[in-house]
Image (cartoon, helix red, strand yellow):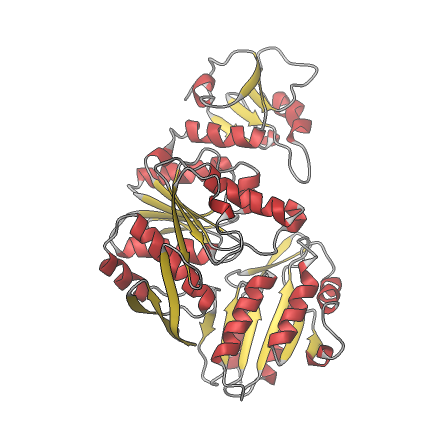
Length: 485
């Protein structure tokens, strides 16, 4: 067991009460999990404050407490460590506890509003196909080489995160590709991570319920690049309005990519179809199974990451051309009715417009586009009217339905989306609260060569209602419905 004094290395400490020469067997953020030789870290959460549970942790025999406020009544034989920020301290402590595993890995962090899952997953697949041992931390799944584990958060808490890194090192991994969420950056969950490469996809309206403003959201994303060392590489999208802002204060070597602006790496879409596209990156032309300009950005970022790792360009492009789309990301569902069915995770205005505008460019206009759209409950409400408007702008028919309503009224969420739809556009709209019934209705309305686009849940295999997760799979419901005809 490590000593408390050792796992406090490089933590910014303002006060110590008690003995730091004590063994620590475990670290927890939940006071109910405290016991002898356990360090309890009190963190200020969005719902409650961990400092309120320090007494409970001590009653359960916690040996030490990390906190931003030392309680008025301290207990003998308990060590109290006061820090400026418990989240940042937790990241560093977790890294020290697991013997700083990211010093032994090349960690590739991907952040941005849209595209994180695709870029991180394709980077993982690219490196695996090239023969490397690689880890993956993503919204869809976590992997240690080829061992798959379920994902509960885009970026786990500091202890879970560092434990994954430690296991990757034990499994011989050389790389880890990971999504880095704005929540994780704002809360310091990655403060103990040594990133070798950071990639920025784009920034648009999302998570303002948490961040409060677009500037705060940008500032959170920027933290990934601000913490890079001088031997790291910072890769940013030069076509995004915030692409250069992200790089302003980084110490890392700067690389930019773009489709429409001057950049270190230039790309363009040569040909786009429902089953893939041809893109040019610098002087090279390649076919990819991914679709749409937004995926051209994702592929180009993957290419930049590979080049930054020193991979031979021809090998890199060959492998990239073989990569399949990520589940739930412009996921084409085959069926015998010649109906084009697409399932996508799009849950932001920008992502929804990317998907529907891409379909618009690919379609012949002789078919009907039916979009099934829901918005999540207990999340940013401001984007709901805009998403309703976007769906109507690009679609012939729109079915407004539930996503994960969580603790909100599904009917009210639908009404929030409907407020963005003009009277003239409202004739396109059906409102069906039951998502399964909404998907089935879309299938019944569709004729051969028509297009059904079901957005919002993508890869998810559940629907969350009032704190309960029920089995639910958009893709499976689509296939079962069409196969029943």
